[in-house]
Image (cartoon, rainbow, N blue to C red; front, side, top):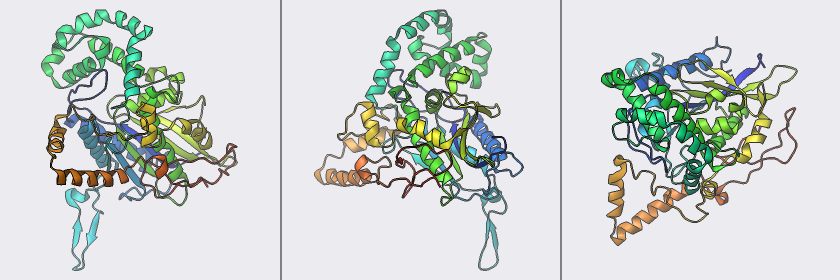
Length: 458
């Protein structure tokens, strides 16, 4: 597949460096945090790297036909996670886009009076960004407010392997107590221990001089074990993989759009946090060949999912996974037991049944049933920035305001991005007619994206 050409790419990127923040070990409700200048630089560098890889015509991975000087908003779509770490993820997305589409003096307009006006900052390019709120779209934050996922965490903590690892880690926890300042030093809380040590080691010169050697490596080792256990499952359909299951739908629908000649989409960016990486690597079997990737990726990491077209005589479309862990270069990682690119039809066949495609399916996976559920209920209860909103809602006791809120909520429900089955259009896909297409009936891929209809593989 060395001679294949890139038709388009889906990039899943992790946010850049930020200040320390807390995640509840049992529910993953989280505190506020802020991005840093270092994080913005990391994400900007990632954007520049992606530009050199996919938007430079001299690159072997150049996306055929994409416009690279000035952004064509019909060719590029950006979705940004707006739940926990939301402001950091948003800042990282903006910084990445600044590197992907840097200022260009050709970003200008000639007015009727023949005056030429160049966009601010030397031709800054403003790329539209869609923020994905967990209150109405669970595709990028599916693990909060999910009772079955909370139970999965509890079961992991009760497992024999976790108890064994907890005993093995006791020497580290005894040694690290003096450096975490009252934070619980146990395996359940290891993510918060690691995050605190890593943040202080990066930002606090005094702390960096005091921390004993190997402590950060030990903390990372145990945090990798912990996060992999929480955000993975042996069964591809398991609730432990829920972070990947909801994102899979976006991936599949984007591949479908890129493959359809009538859709201009060629570059899809999903800016998110670390959790989906863990689930996707587990679900797709990447860890079978790359056990070193078990755990969470570094800041400003990226997973690129390329849609490629083979050269004659095999002109089928293939999918290639490439992973960039922080500042490293891309490395090819193969999925579902393949040792090369996988036909797109096989990838869809293997992945689609694990994808969660609607709020209703998410509720069922989480054990919430199909009845009404306020998905905003507890998502932000630990985030001070949203406290005022809840106080305001609580004060709406007067009857006429109550009626107004009901009408607003009704309109909001009608705009949910993840619709229930009754709201999904039942347009069947045309049969996959490319050479090598798998047998069987056509398949539905409902849309997380702003799709007014579904696109067939032609």
